[in-house]
Structure formats: C-alpha cells, structure tokens
Length: 217
Image 1: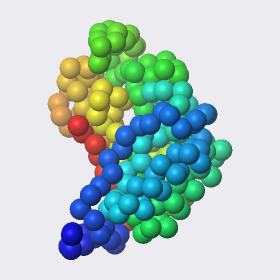
Image 2: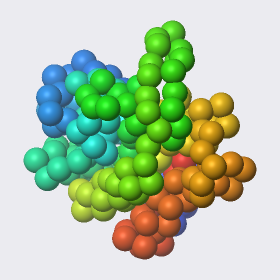
Image 3: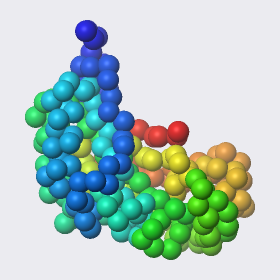
Image 4: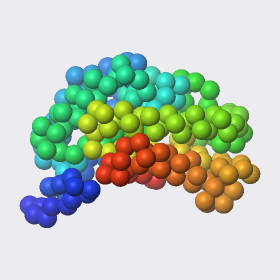
C-alpha cells in the first residue's frame, strides 16, 4: 500500500499510480464533444484508486485534429463535457489535467502546420507542409493559451502540453524539422520559444498555482 502523499501546488495525490493520456477514439466523440461513455471510462479509473489522471489529448483548434473522433477544447460548446469529466474525477478526490494538443504536420482537419517546409515520412505516412508565418505561429500560441483558460474554467487542476510524437510543439523542438532562422528556430533556446511562450501565457492567464506539465516522449 502506498502510504506517502505527494502534494503538487496544493493538490494532494494519494496514490503512486498516474493515468497517462491515451487517446481512445472509440466513445462516439463528434465535433470534439466529450460523451457520457468517455466520462464513464475515466470515472471507472478514478474509482479504482488512481492517483492522478491526465485526460487524453484535447485539440486546441478545429483545424488541428489528429482524428475526427478526438476530443476538443477550442469552443464553448465542448465545455459542458469537460466540466462533467472533471466532476467525475473530483468525486473520488482524484486530480485531473487536460492534455492540450495540436497535430501539426499530422493534422487530418486542416492545412498541416509546420515550423519549416516539410516533405517526408512520419510514423509510416508521407506528409507535406509549408513553412508557417510568424503570425500563424502566434495564432497557434494563443489557441493553446485560450484552451488552458477553458480548462481552468472547467475545473481541471492543470494542463499538459503535448510536445511529443511529431505533433505541433514537438516539431518546433526538433532540429530535424525546425530549420527556421528567426527567433522560433536555430539553437535550443529558439526552438523552445513557442513552448515557453505558451507556458508564460498560461501562467499569466491562469495563475501560478495552475499546474503545467510537459510531455516530451
């Protein structure tokens, strides 16, 4: 039995086990709206004694989805489902984070978003993308920040930025994909700029006690 309690910014975690974010795509999600079936999926894990839940990737923009069945957090129509999901976890005193996501080059719902012009294979599929303008990058940053504000309003205990798996944020971090020569590219500090901008925006908009996690692998 796990005896030690861990406290992260005032939130107590009573189990050593964390539920990692794993997309399901099998619970009838349409237009990014969370269904009762998906809520039941997470409620069962909270009831089972998990210490903390990081909910599956919620897309921050309608044109940045990995799948048409992906949950979303880009508009107010989706908020009731998020509030119900948070309530299902909190009923068992389980903290829950929302993982914020944009598929980037791998999007199926809009123009691929890439830091630099790209043509190649990612996870067994070929993709082509044009280089984003600075204005496009700033728009995407704002979409992540606004999604975090919605997550906080829904009652989430924090958010996780999905910076892995060749998605939008990961592409900026990668020297293989990011060949920019402006402030969003070059050395590691430049390649981290988008992620750091988003984190700073979330801290400013949601407060220092709102938890921020970053997934890198």
